[in-house]
Amino acid sequence: MKKFSKFISEQEVGRRDNHTFVRNPSNGYLNDEVVSRLNAIVGRIFAEGSKFDPSQPLNLCRGSLQKIGLTYGEYPPMTESSGSFSLPLTLFGGRFGKDENTPYDEFLEDDGISSQREGGLSLNVSYEMTETNQYRLRANIA
Image (cartoon, rainbow, N blue to C red):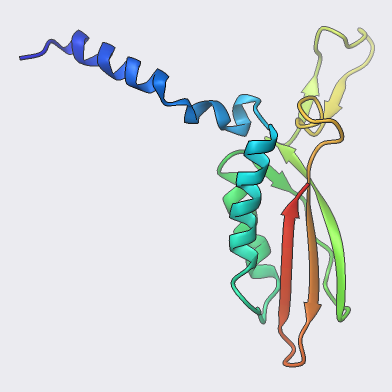
């Protein structure tokens, strides 16, 4: 019979060998591999055909991204027959406070992503209305 401490030490070794925890954006790793995986998730949400309510996939995407700390603001109304818009992403609502480079009379305030990736990230959405008054939406994170 194994002792509990032996069991825990074996589990710790197995966990260190699996590097999936390193790719979580909330851990500060928004590299190209993570963004491409996020684009796969976003593409799956928006590629499910025509929608009569264009807000449904946008709300579903918001919920999926919020699970890992990424959020975006309100989206504009889609009143035209086609168009596109960009929604800036924030990580955990952004950052506010001080770091080692902030002067004493100023505060740091950003999206939480710009410190990891130059220019930050945004959800780019394009839409078009079909002849049956349904919407085709496409989105990606860039």
